[in-house]
Amino acid sequence: MVEKLYIDALAEAIREEFERDENVFMMGEDIGIYGGAFGVTKGMYPKYKDKLIETPISEASIVGAAVGAALVGMRPIVEIMFADFMMDAMEWIVNQAAKLRYMTGGQLKVPLVIRAPMGSGTGAAAQHSQSLPAMFAHIPGLKVVMPATPYDVKGLLKSAVRDDNPVIFLEHKLLYWTKGEVPEGDYTVPLGKAAVKKEGKDITIIAGSIMVPRSIEAAQKLKEEGIDAEVIDIRSLVPMDTETIINSVIKTGRAIIVEDDNKNNGWGAEVLSKLIESDAFDYLDYPIQRLAGKDVPIPYNPQLERAAVPQVEDIIHTVKAIFNKE
Image (cartoon, rainbow, N blue to C red):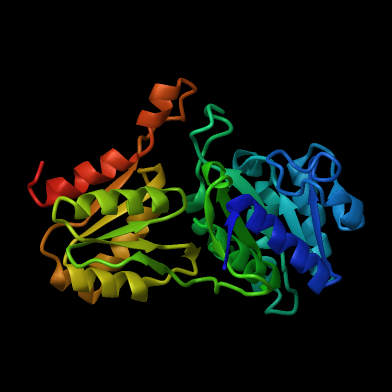
């Protein structure tokens, strides 16, 4: 194991997939000499200039071309500068990439990865700060993952590239400069498998993306006050590992779902529904709680931006309220 930045683990995965499979290549705006808006492909161009295709500023054209390439046997990785801009390519994502394998009875495959940085916390305001995993998870035919650690971002990207279905790969911008241990060499993390990031016995915190490190920090502070929280990183919304989540809630008897996106119709509602419909419901000692973002566009003002999305103190407050310790 070597400690690496999230962004470096991601870049390493891309380079290794370039080397492993001649059909893997990448498309996006400014991903060549400039190295991408967040520097994921920085320094790659001299060696991989045939693999890094600079595109016009047209998300519809980028994804449309990638869908075509995937249909004829290539394995494109698309970088969209901000997840918000995926709205400009929804025809190709929702009506084409997501549906073609099903509509052709499996005769066609769409091995396409669409990567995009998402989320608030950088002062980028409402049109560059949205978290949209629930929107894509609603579309049959798309797989949706949101890695929270350097280990997961490398392993999940490799699995996504090797999958024969379109994968929406969402990276929270604030995670790029976080550190974690990453194995040397090739490894994969399976799509559709959650991870127990911290074991506990009193309550289950189910989190995704940036909320995973925040939930771990909250759990560590709660431990000092006598509350032993278990933290589950959902990692993948589609497919979703309900078994790990259900088993944890059966063990602890309490659950809180912490999500980065706004609450109305967020992915946490789907997790809650699956728990209520499962055996876990009979083990609950307290109603399942959801902690999510406010139902507002992300503000530019830094104080308002912070208030719009759950922070560590919000997780602690919500958990303590369940135990009547507030």
